[in-house]
Image (cartoon, rainbow, N blue to C red):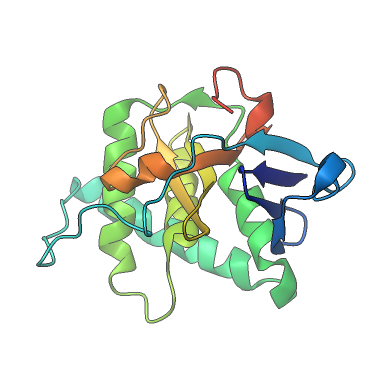
Length: 204
């Protein structure tokens, strides 16, 4: 696992995928804001978003998935929860990232499989009496796809103005699946293949 530095014209977001620590640094001369050995990802196109685009006025019903996917989501969520809790609190982030990348060597999932997995996990997550946000949900979806022998195109990324992190599942072409429009504001920083710079076809 690596340290990734997302550099914008005015700031640098440093994510240590070994520890989960995230820092916001001002841009300094001669690149002193970038840690030694970090993978550098440019985010030149960062623009003002105020943290969102369109926000629904009402909560929309969650799309459903076939029952076999919903039933499969339950053990996937349980495994993700146990994996998250099994170890020091400081290592939760890195443990979930490793788990999300678990099926990297498998054949890529089809778009319908990805959509069913994401929907099934969100359906099952509704009954979890704890914080179960994008990182946990996307990891559980990746686990569910790995359980059926398919690779999930798991993504982690950074958006600016304000700086925020997000995790999601994409299709084979890199398009976010079952995600809001503002997911396009995030630059990909990590994938099952490691830092995004090393991923063929990823814009940096």
